[in-house]
Image: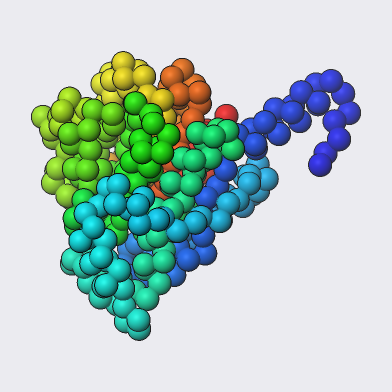
Length: 327
């Protein structure tokens, strides 16, 4: 620990200490063992890039927590029992098996999926019981395309949805907001909470694009807010969608907990989509979400990694996002 030499230095040192204590990282080595195949974009290299981004100062001082496995009850909060049984039964011993054309399981996939969902649920417990103010779950496979009864879009279990359902069931919250800035619409999350007024879902995404959902007319029970963006849209359109539409809806909702599906594939460098965001856009939206959480949720945020398939963009976007959460 650096010893401060003057009043100004003491203030700065305390500020850095408080920033470090305010954010935890949840991850697990098992998340590197999910292997959909050598040519698959959702590769272990993604998580290695994220972890590398969080190695230098000031991230190096952040507390790292080994993610537990999600329990059966936590999974059943968002997935049909038959679907959960199918995923367990599909786990291969020595080869890869497809669940759909894009979503594969390898021998390490089930454990990775359980740890990814478990990370998000454990992070919720920590922020709601005072263990930390904010958390970032550096996990894979991603989750926001997994519906109540189907794996799709590289996703096995819906990690952020499991976290929301766990918060509702265990901590008796009345208003949870899920924010999704992945370039692909989180159809699974929307599907799971379509008729749940205790969860607001707000998403910006490219449209048309996989999975084909996310029109502004899709409203659930009045709790769904989509801001589709056309191919080629960049910072101005992205910021306008949030500033003029999504952030005001979130403010009106006054969430007690803010959950983030943090995808970094809207970056201009990403090979799977055509939005043109820059790294500064991830700092910008995260800063606004931190301010929103400070106003309504005691600063409580849990963020979980979703997409991002250009490794440099993923590394830089993750660093910008977590740095903004620290601020």
